[in-house]
Length: 307
Figure 1 (tube, helix red, strand yellow):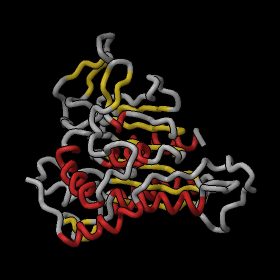
Figure 2 (tube, one colour; figure 1 turned 90 degrees about the vertical axis):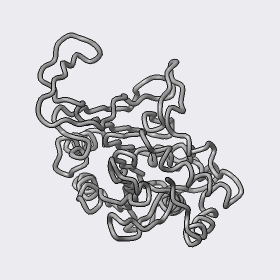
Figure 3 (tube, one colour; figure 1 turned 90 degrees about the horizontal axis):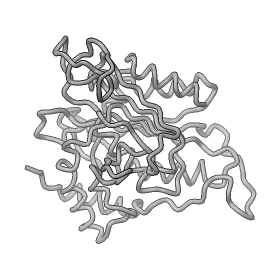
């Protein structure tokens, strides 16, 4: 059963409404008639916005119990260190899988959500992207349900260029169930939907080559690079043979993994331009989000190669 938003939370949503219209800034380097200026000294070359996933299954407290775990886990820092090793100045921000600020009984602290991430994006674009000769690169990192929030940030702001979107085993199952009532209350509170599309509908919303795809499985036109990680299948792989669909022979061997991304990401035109996918043979849904995982090592290698 969904929990009602508290009066304080409704107030926070109302205050956030002023920061919820899509960023309409022209792409950096294309301001006709205006001289481009460099970013302020010391400002970041790369900005990472990271969103953690759901509190797990079973978890009757979602999304209220959802927490930012990618930051304390060290995953955000590991990604940031990859860019720093390339000589770049990096600023990171991390969020929980929730529409807005809330108290998480799991973490025991107040967690920031999508509206706060969106407000940060607007600040980043205004201060370090628009009109800059050396615009900051915006990187999104999401795990599990967090990928729905990062891809929705992209959907909500088509005028913003996102350099790299990193998906760690994106899952849409239960996301709409968890969040639709929060969107409905938010729309009612401010009197309208502030985004170009209804973000509450994120699963199976895009038709590509006759099939339906969730927003998390789409690299939208304003994304340069999409790095996608999928965890191991339900059962461990024992061998590969020339059989459909990918040549896997699945047998109940070792630890099983029942939550995994099984859909390769696509562009809206059906191509995979700029999309790179890694399917783990051994790491679980949770394990791929660890800073020392093979999955994150692959992400870091791709970041270095695609710089």
